[in-house]
Length: 115
Image 1 (cartoon, helix red, strand yellow):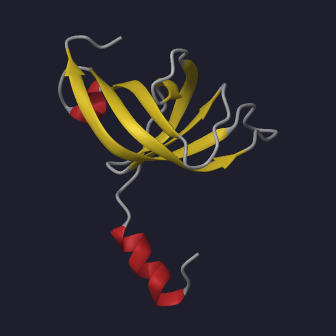
Image 2: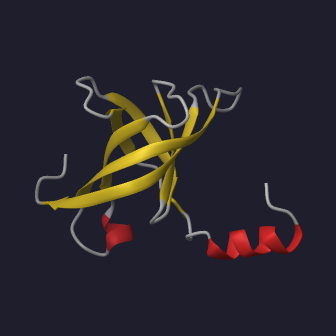
């Protein structure tokens, strides 16, 4: 973990995060079964969500969620991401499902087919 000036620089370089609570579906890359979850916050570079399936660090995943009109400024659209798990946290008293943080590797926006 960075300290002092390095920590300030790392925080300044971090993409702004937006608190967004929408349903998310996710699966291990090339997997067949989707698991369900809920986003906690999103930035252009990463996403934090809680879900039914705990995932290990460095696992590549596929994610899908609908970006609300309030965020995109346009009609709701589904965002499909390829991501890599960078951190996990077990369920707690206040959150009954594990939390998962993922770095977004790439994404595409699908308009008119939001599910």
